[in-house]
Amino acid sequence: LKATGDVSIANKKYNQLTDEETELKDKQSEYEDNKDNLNKERDALRREIDQQKKIMDDKDKIIQEKENRIYHLKKRTQELEKFKFVLDYKIKELKRDIGPREKEISDMKDETNEMDTNLKNLSIVNNTLGLVVDELDRKQAEM
Image (tube, rainbow, N blue to C red; front, side, top):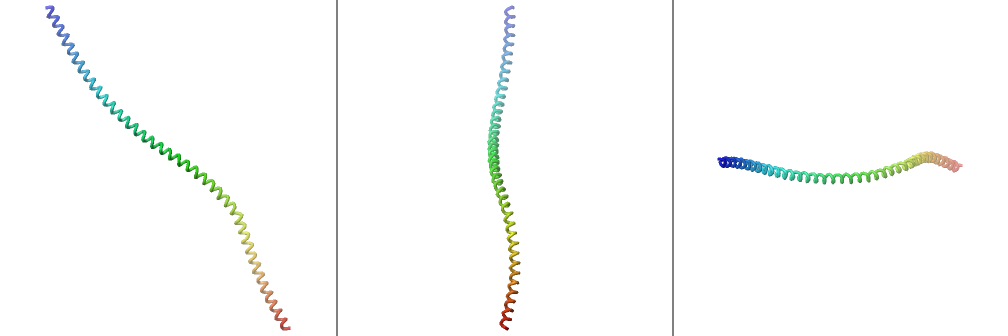
């Protein structure tokens, strides 16, 4: 009787351990599946991270090219501003030189106009004197 009780207890214990083993194997299988899913998700996230890094590198390259272009354009702008300054200075200098020449031209025009007037007056006087000389020559010839 005691042996049957021991066998019964041993069978119960064996059944419990078998059930526990089955339960643990099911949990292990579940954990393995969960681990596989997490590994797949991790790999997908790594691929996405790599893609995003590539996109960032491409954009960084584009930004660097644009910054380089901006730098060269600013440098060119500075050079052009220097040329503009020099040309503005030369224009002011030439305008300053033109002012006295314009006055000189105006003075010469006035002088030319005055000389024309004098020439006309002298021409009139000369013609008058020519007539007077002609008249005197005629009177002398009559005498």
